[in-house]
Every structure is written in structure tokens, then in C-alpha cells.
Image (tube, rainbow, N blue to C red; front, side, top):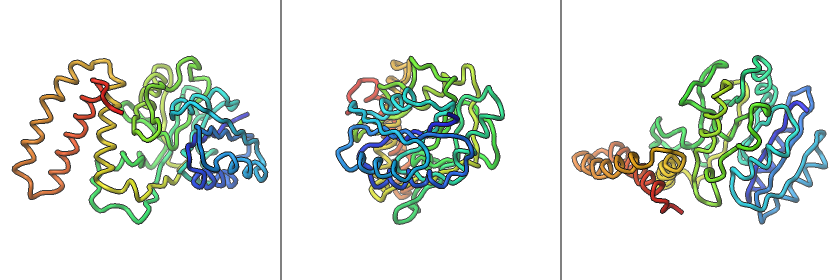
Length: 295
């Protein structure tokens, strides 16, 4: 089996159906399979996969994973896979017709490539927010890294909505860290960064614009309130995944009041105030991550 497409899902049956349907249009001549890991959903996820199995011309495997957590589900998908390459597609993403072929072509170009990511274009429900600063676009899982196939050097990484791994480059005993990654409604992350950093010890990481996906961004996330929450959890994630927690904690304690004071003279400038509030949220996340007080 050349490729395994893995979709991990939790209570998004309608989105999952669109993601699966996008796989019917793939222009890929070799064999591939699809694995759907149902991460303890309570909606029509199982029925959605069953209906798709009836129309698909490739193997579609449904796996129920009771233990909640995105990293748990991803690890289950990898262990159940049989493809030489494991391609992850978010359940709220839609693959372009050349997606699988584009990813596999990069892997085939060099045996030393262990991870490949592709372009991620946003589909905004209700339109893109005019207030979104360029530096915050990546927090909405938007990726447009280059116009050609290029190596992604540290600290750049692909995003989980469109990322693939050479199966032989993975240590089956040390996959995604399960103390990182989203669980339920929290926004804990950094599991991809941590795994890809380990892969870089012996393999290279590449990006291709020729294997793109569309990623839906619901109206519920298009607000400054959600973005600040996302930034807070980014801080939590960094602290949880970091080894130098003591120094990080001390620096964050100093930074929070500094950012508060910096905001006072520029209260008339909403963009600059939001930037400082974002920094406060991030450092509060670092503090919570070190202390273990996040939920």
C-alpha cells in the first residue's frame, strides 16, 4: 500500500462527509487506503463512514477510539496504517484533487524526506475578519509557505490539517506526545512541533504548494475573544512541551505587568492594544502551563 489517508474526528459528521467526498476525486494511480478514527463521537460519525464505504473504490476503515485526545487518535491511525506514507487530513478540511499525488511525489524525490506538508487555504464562514493581523494568520491553521517545493528548516513546520509522514521515519514507540494536542474543547497544541523536531534528527521536512487543502473556519472562531483564547493555549502548549520551565516562568512573571504598562499610552490605537493584550494572554498561558493550572 503506497499511502494511508488518516482522518481523526470528533462530533463533526457533516464536515467529515465533505472531507471524505473530496477523496473520491483524487488523481492518484497507486493504491491507497483511508482510515477514519472516530474519537468517541456521539453524533452520526459511524453512519457517515458506513455510507461512504459503500461508494468508495478504495479501502475505508472505521476505527472507534474511546480515549479522548487528538494525539491519541493520531497515534491510533498511524499504528493501524499500512501505507508507506501516512497523510493526515483534518475532518474539517477538503483535499484538492492532486493532494495525495502531490505529497507522495515529494517523498519519492528523496528517501531522506521524513515529513511533508502542503498549502492550507482558509474558507471563512461569513468572510475573513478585517482586523486579523498578518502575524496571527497561522493561528487559524493557514499556511502558504512558498510557491515551489522547498525544505522547511527549523523552526518552520507543516500544520496538522495537511501533514504527512514517511512511516519508516517514525518511532512506533514514540509517536505524538499524548500529553500534548487537543482534548475535548481545550486548544492544547505543539504535539506536531515536538514530533517533527525528533524526525529532523535523521530526516528532512519539506513543503509543497502542489498538494493543497481548504480548511473551514467557522463563524464561532472569528472573534478576538477566540483568538486570545487560542494565543493563551499556545503559551500553555509551549510551557508543557518545554524543558526550561523555571526560567520561562520567571520571565513571564516580569513580562505581564510590562505589557500592561505599554498598553496605557496607546489606548487610542486598538491594534497596538490588542497586540499587547495578546502578549499578556500568551504569557499567562506560559505561567498556567508551568504551574499546571490550565484546564
